[in-house]
Amino acid sequence: MISAVNHVAQSWWGWMGPMIWQVSLLILIISAIDLFLRRWAWPQVRYAIWLLILIKLFIPPSWTLPSSLISRWQPVAQARLEQILDVSFQSPTTKDVIKLPALPSEMKTVRPDLRSSKETTATLPAGASPLTAGPRLGWKAVAMMGWILGLAVFTGLLAHRITRLRRWHKNQVEKKTIPVWYYEILVRTADRLKLGRLPAIVFSDEAKAPAVYGVFRPVLLLPAVYLDSLSEEDAEHVLLHELAHLKRGDLWLHGLFLLIQIVYWFNPLIIWARRQMKHVREVCCDLTVASLLKEKTVKYRETLLSTARELLTESAEPGMGLLGVFEDPFRLVVRLKWLEKKTWENRKLITATAVLVTLVLTAGILPMGSPDGDQENRKEASQSGDFHAVGQADDRRCPSDARTPQPGAGGFGQARGLYEGDPTVSRREAVLPLFQ
Image (cartoon, rainbow, N blue to C red; front, side, top):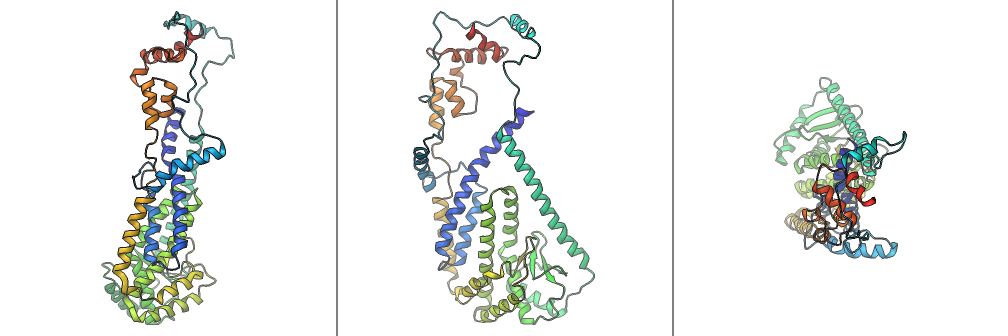
């Protein structure tokens, strides 16, 4: 059982280990690029760059391309780090393996008498420990168990939030009706965005600001007294913003990133990336509304300002994973500045730039796997028949040419050949002739 757990943990770490440093490095690189571009680059381009993190989380860490800068610089950086720390991170090759002295030629590997071995084992004194200890949980297995525990905790928190949202929906269904004028604006706004399905509307006393949630069944969440003092123009602006999230598919990406954050709950850089994406996404959503309003965007900016005054001391997203008008009111200045620009006049250029930048970065920094890996180590170790190097270069069993004793392979190489050649011989029985 413990051996099986260790084997599963080894496979888990084979994915999770490289993914930790690769995703962390990618987030740092994209954060630096975004810091350089945020003053003048279109938000749509910045958002496309941040989405590379989401793509990376679904790509095998061993994937590489000849155009990858990370794969090209990785050996150089690793060699420099080894020189500074005076350590080696590479798997040892046959040149690095210490050869054991060969046994005299007259010594032969003879299969020991099974009966005498059993008698020796049976006559061990009471309390004496055997030659080989039982398997123990490795640190990778312990790390995997801790990861599973954290995964269960954060999954439970997400389930609690979903249950809370459903309770809001259930408690208000028959207590609040939608005014006719508001429903007409909702239908008209959905037609402008060419939205095929209207979201359900839920009123709640606990909601602080309008927001949308629900991947498969979208729901528009409104404060209970929100419509009492709302003008038709402000209502249209808010609906344009919320329905634009549905049109852009933001709920799908937001939900997917929530699941990713649960899987990689231990990485704080994932949380940082998610917050940056939320902010850029809100700016992109504002520009989608501006592309519809065009010259009337000034009125939309006034609606944002008037709503922001009421939310400066409130939390627009109480940890529920919602997409609202104000997820972070303190970043409103950036959104207002972009609404002053007529970005709708350059929509084709923005799209082409976003696609081009994404393709360049995908080819240059997204592949981070080693171009050669340990293939040379495996090949060299297999040709030499040295099981020490083969064990380091590959976790698979020793190739067939190493199962038979090779000249100059050493006593332990002969013992390995005896053990592999006859599956009825235990490892202890195969090693015993070396000490006789």
